[in-house]
Image (cartoon, rainbow, N blue to C red; front, side, top):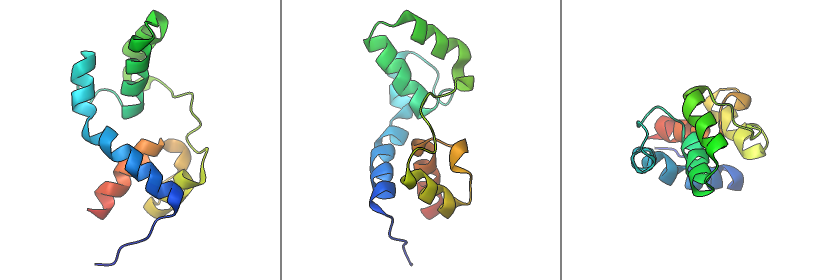
Length: 108
């Protein structure tokens, strides 16, 4: 089996995303929300908002759910562009975690 060697940025994105993807259900349960309803980024935002006792952010995330738009520029780094090019998708449509999860699925 031939494996593609990823640039450092893409490898780092994968390294950071794997634990997040694997623990989404646990994180959702710890936050008291349904699993598979929120993205990894939304779960992290919700966790941070709860830690900061930010009622406005909590309400926004919970009310808007999967429709919440991240304030992070999805195509802000070259690693995203490289992962997206490998996967044949538009990097602006996915977060780093989503691209990393797609890459893992594609190469398993």
